[in-house]
Image (tube, rainbow over all chains, first blue to last red; front, side, top):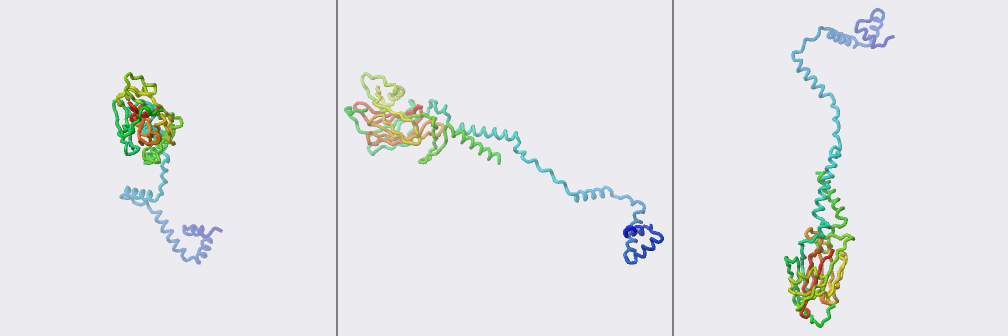
Length: 168
Length: 170
């Protein structure tokens, strides 16, 4: 025996006849809503079987609205993640390294005196930053002679040393 | 911004590495003057001499050690003859105090640190104390570089003048 839904569909479509129809209508006695459902289904069938609907007056607008709605309701595919690490591409690393070397070289050249420079005969002259005499009887004066590039600390007030004193 | 910070850090690292050999930047504990620590291979010396300057009728040529200084000594002090009473040289060690004893009567204590400024051309910042026997004559802080001597006019001796000469030798 066919299932109830199948027989119900056949009944709605007037496909049941003879003893099958009688038996099914007896069975429908326990389903009072069946008649209403049959009427709804037939009404829908009649509508579908009617001639095609008249053309829309504003079809473009309708289509546009429809497409917009579809687009709004369709979940967007996730954007591809930005390529990570673009900043540290090989050329950029090479540039950064070159820049570092330049900066380091500049700092080294500026701040660290090279041995060659240190060995040169320079115009640099001795400078006396501070001079403190050993006691109050001594005066210290600093003189710089630019022609000879020499600095002299001139001490006055020292005791005379007789020539008889043996210097060694 | 991140790149600039990285550049700075890297540059400082390279600079520190470069500065570590053969010289390294450091700062004196006792003063704010930045100095360079000498590399072990450095053989700079501080040379000192006690010179007797006189004006004899027939001046003699200066000894070899003074030949470099004689023309300048003549012009600065006005004497014609220069005799070397004694000389002494010590390797410059920035960690210890050196004693220079060019003569039995005149001697010096020296503490040296390499001057970091480019103008100093590898010179030194020296703390010097000059003694005549046990009497302190002078305490001074001076910057010396090779080729730039420091003369100290000492006491009169007989008809002459005693001069102490200091120079950094490389």
